[in-house]
Length: 294
Image (tube, rainbow, N blue to C red; front, top):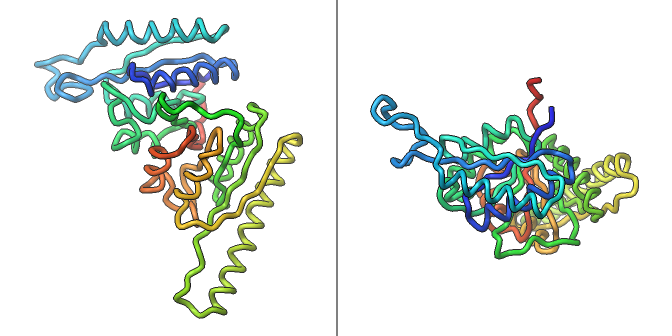
């Protein structure tokens, strides 16, 4: 099954930046590109409350022209690109979640207008981040150029989800000829407990971090012998603050869709919202693709 790279497009600068990156990714992976616009009924719903009275909303000519124009411009800039467009009746979150079932990757901007208003800033973002069926790449706003040359940073916490994130991050670093930085975050030692207890707990946490990072690094080096891999064990007040700081020098941050320890709750609460809204580089959420239906 030749899964496409899907980009959510609404004409906003952020969505156009996402489409640009999606086009480059599609060509690099020899995949087709699908530009999707989720449109709403004028009352604010994907379908009317009473379809017998209002009927199912139809695709708009304006949106179709916008999609065709974007596809044509991308084809000019990316030779070999195979691009298709699609309008979907329904909210943007639901539209992209459904398309993710058949996608190699979904690429979205962190801000939008029209059909993608509030993307990844509220309930729509929650839908996509929590319920996507393939990896999801969140692109920073167009006014913040995508950094190049920096490392690919990935969060490591020992969970299955983080292991898949490391796998994706290593593939991305290989494609970019970039360094892969494995990052494990642990909380500062608490001063309220007895010093000897705190010291023992701290030593155990440091040992665990070293083991987790070493295991992940060994796995990566077996699969990617020539890849430059660094291991970073950091102490921070929160995972989001550590990842946000690391994103300042990174070309990409990769995170699992679930986690434990320092990354518990990732993409289920404040950590996810902070990262997708405030990271300085694109963020890749590592959802495992569903098996193909073919």
